[in-house]
Structures are given as structure tokens and as C-alpha cells.
Length: 140
Image 1: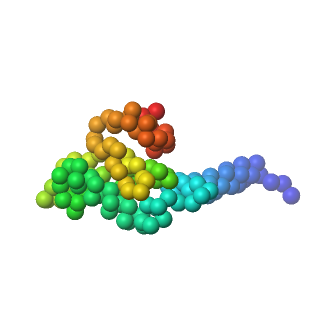
Image 2 (image 1 turned 30 degrees about the horizontal axis):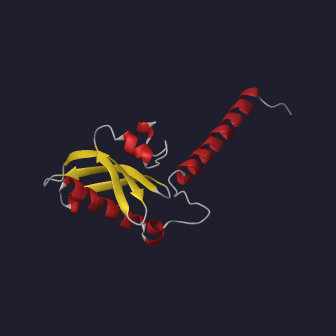
């Protein structure tokens, strides 16, 4: 039985593509999981759901920018045991985004916004608070 070389090459290419797809899907699924230490989650993560942490960040940003929290949209990008980073936007009365930017928050007993804005972040303060390069790539 003779195997055609073209058929064999196409078959191997298909196998490589399928394996690559499964590796990519698995990577995307795990990329934003919380990083948990061996001692478990801290108080804020243990007591608050993802939606509650998102709502706390919205409230903190509304205080910072003096707007109603219902005009702020928050997208948490990365979370670790002690830090949260992500994007936000502020909408006007027509529901159009008038301002958007990045936020960095420290998690301890409470969630505290370390920096939020649309310009270059305060990298010195962000590094001092222990944010990783993965969470604040513009600062490294």
C-alpha cells in the first residue's frame, strides 16, 4: 500500500493545526483566572464576587472623577491576590463614551484605586505597590 506524500503532509498539517487550536483555547481559558497563593484568597476576594469587586471599582472611580457610577463602565482585565487592573469608560447623558482609560487598584481589606486615567500611569507608584509586569506592562 503506497501512501501519497501530499496526503501525508496535509494530514500532519491538519493534526498540528488542531493541536495548536486546543492549546490556544486552553491558554485563553486560563489566562484571567485569579492567581491564588497556597494560603488561599484574601479577604476581599473571599467575601466579594467578581461583580461586587467590579461595582466597588465603579464606585471608587465615580468618586475620583465626580460622576455618577451608572455612567461608568468597568472591564477588569487582570486580577491577582493583591492587585486588579483594567479599563474603564465614562459616558455622557447620550450614553456616548466621553472619557476612557486604564485603572490600577490595590486589594487589601478594601479595594483602593492607585491610579486611573488616560495618560501615562504613575509608574513609580505602581511599581512601589508591587504590580507585576503582566498587570502594568507600560511601566516595565
